[in-house]
Image (cartoon, rainbow, N blue to C red; front, side, top):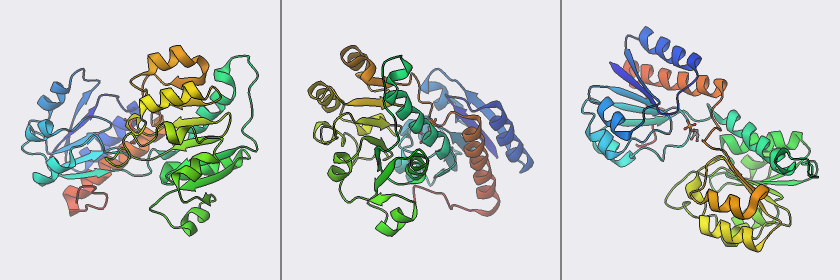
Length: 306
Ligand code: 3PG
């Protein structure tokens, strides 16, 4: 089978080598499309492929229509909001992700961002410490749980909200369960967002929620920019000069935010949460194994579009 590794943001060389090794050994051919400038390149690149490995690359209905042989798409990572699941399902194409494989990298970045903001973006101004502060974790999945564990090691107290987990499951991870998003925000000196972008979550974090945060609080978003209501965020930062926002997913209105709020806001120039050699290797190799296994045995364990 012909497998396309399509990564606009390429994997570390070691990950690409590993992916190629696993798939070649299993009898497949690997072709690469890295750093491509246009979506049209992806549409063109899928014409004769049977399987596709991607990151945040956009697998739209147009891409799917251009790939008559395609049988499986593996998103080497967690979020699959970049794949048109319905279009894939309509063509019988299996879509998978690689849950948990890049979580540690994202969790470490979230913690790093907290320190960065607490220490006024590494300027000489007097900062504050994380010790003794309260962290709220919004969605206690692979990343949220790791952020909580690491924050506890720094002496923070951790509460978490996750509608898909029982109190026992949250307690077992070491956090205190909270039962409403309002309650979570109201008691979080640091609030780390780990919800996916879904119709129900897009634009769900806005003025009302953000202004519930206590004095001096920081909101950290290493999830998706779409979950933030950007106008609401702007207004919240205007009305509450004590609040801060740090994100790995640059808001559309970042230039305006920066101009108005200076060191109280920060966004990475390009999403980098999962951009470590380790995360690339973990997620990339898992994707390759899942494809090899799918063609060898029909295993669809990580399918997300059933
Ligand atoms: C994910 O959903 O796995 C992360 O957001 C990482 O995305 P990336 O592979 O585009 O860096």
